Image (tube, rainbow, N blue to C red; front, side, top):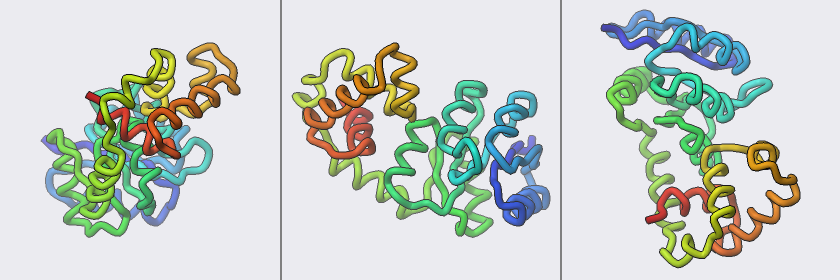
Length: 209
């Protein structure tokens, strides 16, 4: 059976090109494509593709937030980021939100098709130097048992929500605490884990014993 693929990409020429590549490739079927996250979130639960190719820089809801919401609606659908962004922050935010792969738009078409096959088989395809950045970030942020054990239950709860890709306002609403209180918890988390960014904190949380 063909792998069914949907595309979320705001650049019309690229979206059309990707759809054409999939249509011509054996074993693939492009079942839908969208220029923004809002349309994708409305329609994808009906389409139920095997794989979604997701851009990050979208108008309105961005790609990372779209992944987080989409995985709640379609937990079995695999999402692979297809973007120009190579920075660690975007990589970790996308993976924490539920993306299974991270490829760059300049990836040759044959490699992109193989990456779609891999993510459908349960793998986590990444452009080589993206994968190296992930490994280096984990190594740099390798936690000690003591660091994570020092977090209070509430601080661990806040960090867990951060790792899911939630923003401060969403954490505030979910936990029923003020925005300022969320800031206070996150400042304490950073101090205890000896980190300075959300990405480093999430990396330590994902590597906890």
